[in-house]
Length: 134
Image 1 (cartoon, rainbow, N blue to C red):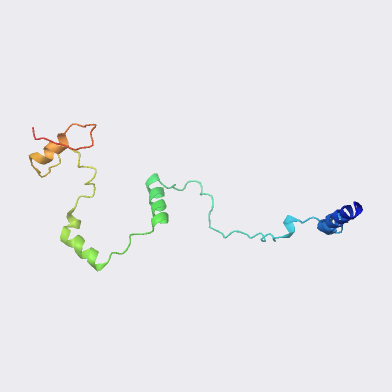
Image 2: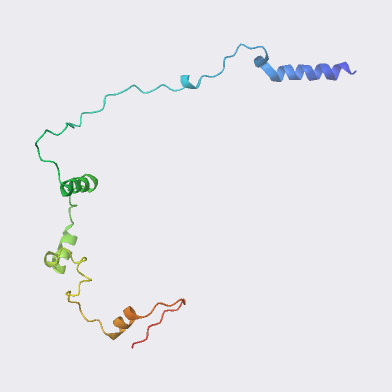
């Protein structure tokens, strides 16, 4: 009676082990799964070394070329946008307006005492904002 469970256990182990116990199967080759792409000669970008005595690009030229390569040329504007810019007077705007805002010679419109009080208000550590005219 004791021999039949041992025999049953041995038969189960042999059937679960399968062919790997007796050999006959090679291990998998991970390099045989996918083929390598063939080597390709890159396109010719006509990059030639500079000729001696020729002028090199200045920093601004290189910057302009980089901006052109990244963003392309100016985007075409729609008729609505063009009309809005014409009515707003975009052609009369100063090109460096953002740079000259803090200049003491810049003329600004007086917004009144309330705006000046808000700008001159001291910093506070509270969650509530308050500004009293002085």
